[in-house]
View 1 (cartoon, helix red, strand yellow):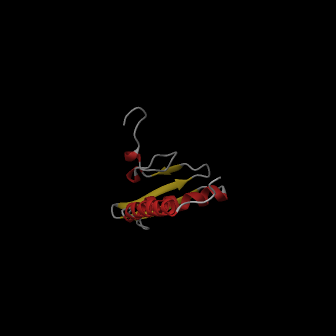
View 2: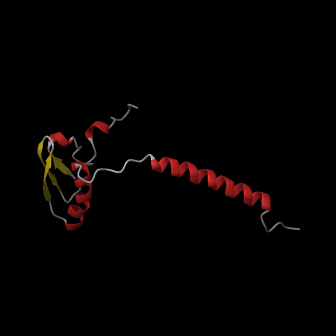
Length: 104
């Protein structure tokens, strides 16, 4: 005799485990801060796909509290930005968040 169905206990345990996972995921997602749309880094991140898709360089001039910042987004995905934005040229993320290889 072969067993072809799930028992009620197996289904209840599976649903309970999925509920726990959903609760943990919900708590984790609530802690994620949404980026400020006026932040220059957010503007750059939103504009980079346009530069790549249209295969042209885009120069952005962004006013900030500490002055005007300029950044050029290239079609190869690199970003040349004002040093005050602290961006790594080739990957476009904050330079102070990058860890060198071998250091953890």
